[in-house]
Length: 213
Image (cartoon, rainbow, N blue to C red):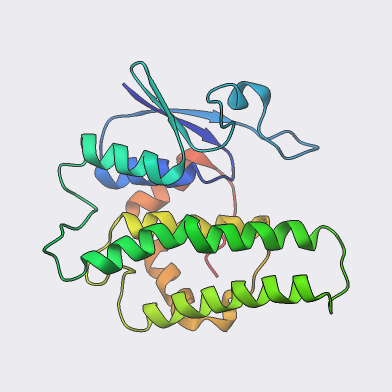
């Protein structure tokens, strides 16, 4: 049985959402962050040497890292769904946005989050540069969503699932005004209407306000 080990308010929400979109059987085990440090509890960190979310187990396999987990679940259980084939005209866009999520946007937001906690002067050049990179990344996402309903193009894919956390729940850790990105706001309104997304968030983080605006 595929088990999703879900740490509250973390990138593991991607995997819960993925399983709900695919409508595959899975077990969900939820873990709560430490109330003081907001870090993962020891039993979560012990699941995998990386000590980070997400983590899945599938038989004897234990796997971490969002992109790897999404690829694994789709390859083993997806039957070709939520990814595009190389002959699809949107294939390159799918690859770009799938990897942009953690390769660029999530990393930039994470660095900005750390710098914000250092209480640096607003004119600090490193802080200004980092904030500028985040703005440019959001501008890029906003421009793309002015061209297409989904990040890969015509179809909802795993690229949307990968990007979803950074556009929403990550803003609990690094606040960002997406009001400056109207296409992103409209996109998140469409995401909010997806039954699988609603089910995933209700199962994984019940009662959490969804940062969709």
